Image (cartoon, rainbow, N blue to C red):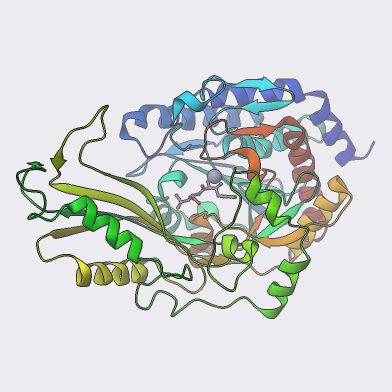
Amino acid sequence: MSTISEAIFYSEANQNRFIDELIDLLRIPSISTDPAYKKQVAQAADWLVNHLKSLGVTNAKAIHTDGHPVVVGGIEVDPNYPTVLVYGHYDVQPPDPLDLWISPPFDPAIKGGILYARGACDDKGQLFMHLKAVECWMKTSGHPPINLKFILEGEEESGSASLPGFIHKNKDLLAADVVVISDSSLFAPGVPSITYGLRGMTYMEITLTGPDRDLHSGTYGGAIHNPINALAALIAEMHDADHRITIDGFYDRVRPLSRREQITMTVLPFDADAWVREVGVHLPIMESGYSVLEASTSRPTLDCNGIWGGYIGDGAKTVLPSQASAKISMRLVPDQDPSEIAELTEVWLRRRVPKSMQLQCKVLHGAQPVLIDTESNAMEAATRALRDVYDCSPYFTRIGGSIPVVADFKHILGLDSVLMGFGLDSDAIHSPNEHFGLDRFAEGIEAILRFHAHYAGTGSVKA
Ligand code: BES
Ligand code: ZN
């Protein structure tokens, strides 16, 4: 048997144990955005360090940051081999609303070959495929056919605030030829894709304050402006009738889709009606002049993620609240800049805030949008690997989500990323009942092994 066949055979023979180990990791509620879970995030980092060590990555360690720890480690097989830096994130989104889960989010359950748990797909399940690929090589050939390094972070879901600083400080430790990330999706079941575009992000929290305390809405209503009413009006004004964002200058730096991208998007096997129906909606709504696929992957957005103020308990309370707040995220596309968009938004808001109120604006985090060159040895190796596994060539796609570190790898280390993901849009990431098909877990490991083998052959100028 060839070395790659042996490694794949080993993966197939050990799938059940691999899944049991992943379930162990999924039990740890490593919710990065909630300070109450700081210990659990650190626990997940330690779990990964121990697991990497058990695979033979003896130098694995968790490095402390101002935020959550970063797990690093690597195997240098031969300085002449190309080096792949594997990125993944071990933190997860909050599981709320809990009552909608069919099984508890941190008590993983398998039903019909599908693993349900917070993080099953995003991203513990996907990063674990890379660890298991290492094991497959170690237990069959004794080492991978390339050099491997890992950088696993615990802050991705809350904006990766510590990571740029960490990368700056650890350039040598992270030096590589390319980054590989599995934190995105297949185009459809059995249809592979390589993501070459990610949207960026500006995330803000805004608060309007009116009266200095909650008031009786009978005594004061009609004469004192209500902050919830005012905030709702501002949010409504942020889009026009064509669903374009009205913030002055918002679109100034937006790079239009190339002609080639526009054509590709029309030939992708994307069923917009089915995609919309799958989330229980009858009609899509998007910026005039764009298709569902264009609007959801390659155009900027503004969404209110949460809004609060006043009385939200049972029954009715007649109150004119002192404050109203909203969390607003804006997905950005090249060449928009997260800080500039935050400034433009604040200026726009300040011009419109009613005179009777004060506005507070906080930027929670930002991420640069990304477009990756699809012509490279690593892209070619990934294309071949996916073709081997799925019997069809991957599509090159842009996705609407964000992975902040991808831009940092490019700007700080000069490294491109290969985004080879095995999720599905329907895996309910960030939603109740997140899941990951065990078939895709196995396919992912095989594709990663084949990627290593192809990249070893063709991947680097050094090879
Ligand atoms: N895995 C996602 C990115 C993603 C989203 C891939 C949708 C494929 C489809 C990632 O973990 C994520 O959710 N990122 C955050 C980043 C944000 C907090 C800056 C996101 O996109 O909301
Ligand atoms: Zn993720």
